[in-house]
Image (cartoon, rainbow, N blue to C red; front, top):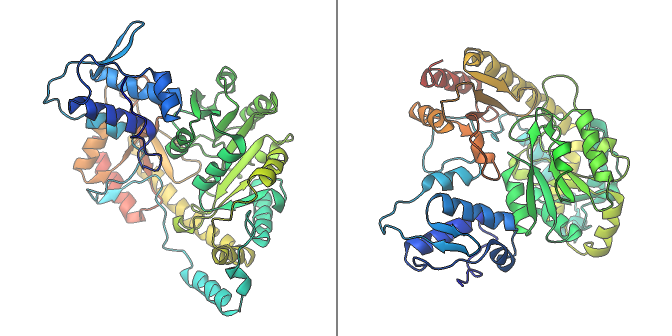
Amino acid sequence: MYDMAAFLQTDSDKCLYEQIYEHIREEIKGGKLRYGERLPSTRTLADSLQVSRNTVDFAYEQLLSEGYIEARERRGYFVCKLDRHLPESPAFVESIRDVQREEEKKYAYDFYPNGLDMSVFPFGVWKRINKNILTDSNTELFSLGDPQGDYDLRETIVRYLHASRGVNCTPDQVVVGAGNDYLLLLLEKLLGRHIRVAMENPSYKRAYRIFNSFAYHVETVKMDQNGMRADDLKTKDVSLAYVMPSHQYPTGITMPIGRRMELLKWAEGDDNRYLIEDDYDSEFRYKGKPIPSLQGVDKHGKVIYIGTFSKAIAPAIRISFMVLPPALLEKYKKDCGFYASTVSRIDQRILNEFIKDGYFERYLNKTRKLYREKHDLMLQKLKPFQKKFQISGEESGLHMVLTCKDKKITEEELVQRAAEADVKVYPMSAAYLTCVEKKDAVILLGYGGLTLPEIEEGISRLENAWGM
C-alpha cells in the first residue's frame, strides 16, 4: 500500500483536499504510482493524515471523475492506465480555490467581494493616539498582558457589542486575538479534535479549511431563503454548527428570528452542542434596523460569538474577539489560560481609545454613508440586468449576488466575457465546500473597494459584455 503520510502541509495556503488531489495526480502522471497499483482506502488515508474522511472522499471523487483512478467493487481504488502526455486539470484547481484576486493579472475594474474603501480612514487621529500612548511613559504596555486581552479593551468591546448588536456578556467572557484564525484555533483546544461540524454550502471557505486542518469532519447542510435549514441540520451527526446569521457569505442572506430560534433549539438538545456565530460585517446594513445577534437571544449559553474590527476599521488592524458561553469560559480558564495574547498591548490601547473617544462611531458613520452611496449606485446601474438576472444580497454587506435566469449560460462564460472587457467578477462556485450538482450561474459583485466612477464604468462594461 502506498504511503502518503509525509506530504501534507497543514500550514499551506492550499486546502487539504486540494493537496491530496494534486499530490496523487502528480504521482500518477510522473509514474511513481503505476497502472494497477492500489491506493489506501479513504478511511485508512484519513486516519493516516489525521484529516476527515470527507476530505479524502472529495479528493478521490475528483480523481475518479478525471480518470486518474478507478473504483473496483469491494476491492478499493486503483491507478488507471494513462497517456503520459495527459494535460493538466486547471479547471478543478481553480474551482476549489477561495475567491481571491488574480495576482498575475490586474483588471481595470475589480468587483472584489471583500474590498474596502480606506479613503475616509482617520489616519491623523490614529497616528496621534499612537504618539500620545508612546510619549506618556506607559511602561506597563511593554510588559506581558492578560492572555484574554487588556481588561479595558474587553470592557469597551462589551459596551459596544451590547449597544450595537444586543450581545449580553461580561468582559470576563471576551477573548481578544489576532484575527479569526487564531480564535478558531483556540476553539479547537477547547472543543477537542475530530469534532463533527456543520456548515452551509456555499460558505466562508477559509473557516472550512481551518476546520479541516483540525481533522474536523465537516457536514454540509442545505440552505433555503432563510439560511441554514434546521430540519436538515437535525439529520446530521454533528455537535457544532458554524453560521453567519446577520449576513451569510457569500449568499447575503439575513437569517430571520424564527430560523435562529430553531437553531438554538437544536443546540439546546445536547450539552455538547454549540453554535459559532461569525458576525463579520454586521455594521453595514441598508434596510431596516440592525438585526440583533444570535447570541443576544441565547438563554442557555449555546452560542460562541466571533467578531472582528478588520471589516469595520481596516484589514491590517487584525484584532478580533470571541465571546465564550459560561461553560466554555470555565474550560478556557482551566485548559487554555496559559496561552499568551497574540495582540500587541500598544495596538489594544490604540483601539480602545479610538472606540472610547468616539472616533470609531464617527468613522463608522462616514463609511456607512460612503458604502450606502456605492450601494445605491450599484442598484441603479443594475436595473437593466433584472431581465436576465435575479439580484439579491443588497440589504447589507459590501457585495451583491447576481443569479442568471438563463440556465444555458455558465459561470465560466460570464467570468470570461467580463474578463475580455477588463472586468474581474467572482463566481459563486468558488465558495462551495464540496462538489454539488450543477447550479445556476451566480456572480458576486463587490463594491466596497471601488470608487463611484469605477462602479459606473465597470457596470457599463458588464452590461455590454453580457448583452443586457
